[in-house]
Image (tube, rainbow, N blue to C red; front, side, top):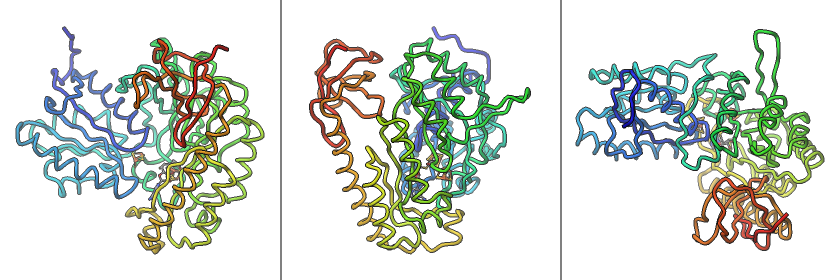
Amino acid sequence: MEILRPGTGNGQKIYIETYGCQMNVNDSEVVVSILKKEGYRHTENISEADIIFINTCSIRDNAEQRIWGRLRDIKQYKKNNNSLIVGIIGCMAERLKEDLIEKEKLVDIIAGPDSYRELPVLIRTASDGSKAVNVELSKEETYAEISPVRLGKDGISAFVSIMRGCNNMCSYCVVPYTRGRERSRDPETILNEINDLVSNGYKEVTLLGQNVNSYNFNDDKGNQTDFSELLRRVASVSPELRVRFSTSHPKDLSDEVLYAMRDYNNICKSIHLPAQSGSNSVLKLMNRKYTREWYLDRIGAIKRIIPECEISTDLIAGFCGETEEDHKGTLSLMESVGYSFAFMFKYSERPGTQAARNYADDVPDDVKTRRLTEIINLQNRLSLASNKKDIGKIFEVLVEGTSKKSSSDMSGRNSQNKVVVFAADNEKPGDYVYVEITDCTSATLLGKRVKK
Ligand code: SAH
Ligand code: SF4
Ligand code: F3S
């Protein structure tokens, strides 16, 4: 029998559904940890939940539309269970605040990303039939000492948030408004969490922040830890532990970070470096604070210091004022870098951002769609070319599980973050194996196991 810890939860069941980025995935784990301490239980079955939380994303309009649709589905559960509590947490809660309750009567709790420690109190208020709202942002909160309850089931790979918020104010972006000011988490708590993960058999951590390169922690003894130092300390925890990180802002990617990556075998040779655009005038309007030339200089440094590193990116098609020539600049940047992978989006105006206030969203939707299609088609070609050059190479692969397409194949990733599929031979998730690449698609490397 499960022994419940004292608290107000009294064994009530929490169901949590997560949208948006990896930080939200990790935040849901923090939420479950906070609530378990208060005697609540976590369930994966929505129909048995006493409390449903939706951890939301506001990054683009279609992300929010998906969540509105989901809320309509959730009405049926409330019909069946009068005392069911529904909470909206995360970025949409922060962006819309009390308006959410006006728009959707179903919602009982609204909690922004910095108020999760208050959730037990908010649940109590909602249980009395009142609406409960806390959308205060904090300058300090990093949930530093909370051990997230791992909701991903693989037991191999975990997200570790090292900072929260963002100070960059890219003109299109809602994140600074939903997540507040940037703050770094105490490295000792990060290392404790990672040591625990290693003793529980985890083989990979991804350090998370909106701009990990500006990580900087000053303790009360005057010691300073920057991101390259943190990377070295995390990589030293165990040579068996793979270390990844996301996301890097190009303006802050220092050579010291690249040297740390070069010096430690277990820091993965993959950098996600969102370019957003290849045109200087668009980058300026976006307030990205770098030029195409600066970006390409950073790419040059990566290729020089870590030749085996793969580079991926984020791109936005059809930002305010983007001309055909600007768009061609993005395509040519993609060609020059030779990305292995990209997340590609149509610009979506977000209310309240600098771009929404100052610039017209003037690229017609059909033009945005056409430009995005051109970007996607080019990326497919670049991904295929990047994969083809790996044919004949041997990679160390961390096995994740059986392949989605065939149960007689296993799937894992190489250091460069590419998916590698090979014939199963008694491997377990979490094993390191060597695979020689014999073939590929634009999304996957295919190979056979070899001894090394
Ligand atoms: N902090 C990270 C990215 C966070 S958001 C960084 O700066 O790199 C993830 C991606 O969503 C961004 O890189 C951008 O490409 C995209 N994005 C953000 N706001 C957007 C908007 N309003 N419309 C379309 N795409 C957007
Ligand atoms: Fe948004 Fe820019 Fe911050 Fe990334 S760096 S979260 S794109 S404001
Ligand atoms: Fe979305 Fe918030 Fe992440 S807006 S992308 S969930 S920081």
